[in-house]
Length: 418
Ligand code: HEM
Image (tube, rainbow, N blue to C red; front, side, top):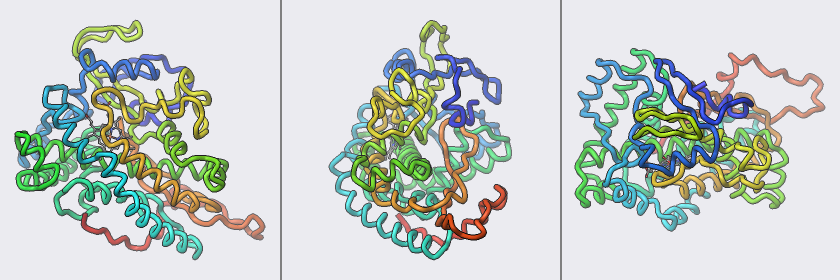
């Protein structure tokens, strides 16, 4: 269950707190109810965030050596920092992502998305399949982030590959060969960040000026580059896919009866890109009557908590604006609550407003497929094409699953520098 929890998110019968063993025999306490998830997230004394970035598959010595060779370190900075430095580091990052700076990016992003949608619409009209992940959603959040935060000059493709490698290395069940390959990729880019952290301006300079050591600057940039863009591109893909199956919602958007912001919130509730998030028990405690010894890993099932019938009127239905829709915990809660929520919401609102019309009259050629992962969805593609008219004499049959990926004939995508 742990590594494909999104597939069981609506399954009945889960207890409020469940003991689940992982692939290496470690038992986690999976917390499913909204109130309990919030209780854990907002009590950093009993439940600390120290394990937020721990590798769920312990790293073998040879992978650790590769990382050490790149001087890889992840000291407590943001999500994994329960110490005194957290509020100050968070405040510096929050300044860079201030709502007024986010709002200033909206016109630029709208123009870019509009341009892409026009190109994709023309491709659909010409009968071609289009991949709304690769050709629309994948790089948008990184391009916006690079306008808000000074980042190393690296090709977008290289940053995406590094970030996805990091999500796999730390949160996926892996064998030793794969760990080694991922450690090499993650370690190499970490080196790029280390060089940049010493000299870069903007956020890196602000952290240096506040007296934070180089490891902390690198660690903060590392987390931002992963959390600040992969999450949102995954969300955009999952939300577009969901909307493809919600014609009534699209009609409401078209007619102006359904506000875009409500669609984004309902999307976060039902299709969060981060399905679970971890905490570790600092002391012996009980949670809803279940004993929680110090050291226990708690897996907070954010996606399930968003469907808690105590909170939301129609838990499994996409009903923008319904009672409880906005009370999801997709962004966490408490002192570590996501500091990029305003940015993520802005990006999603622009994409929904501009790209939802693309979904009218199309059929899904290939739904997003997500690899095993404790926390991140990581959809790989979302391919659509114009639906055949219902009156066609020989309606086309859907192809067998194995052939579908090759169907995505994509124009070569020019990946810009950030
Ligand atoms: C849909 C997109 C996103 C989702 C679902 C998401 C979700 C989350 C979650 C669940 C956490 C952990 C919260 C906790 O421990 O209580 C978190 C933390 C964080 N997120 Fe996001 N996030 C998204 C986008 C972003 C973006 C765009 C940025 C920045 C550009 C960002 C930056 C951060 C940071 C810095 C933290 C750590 C905050 C701290 O520890 O003080 N996230 N996010």
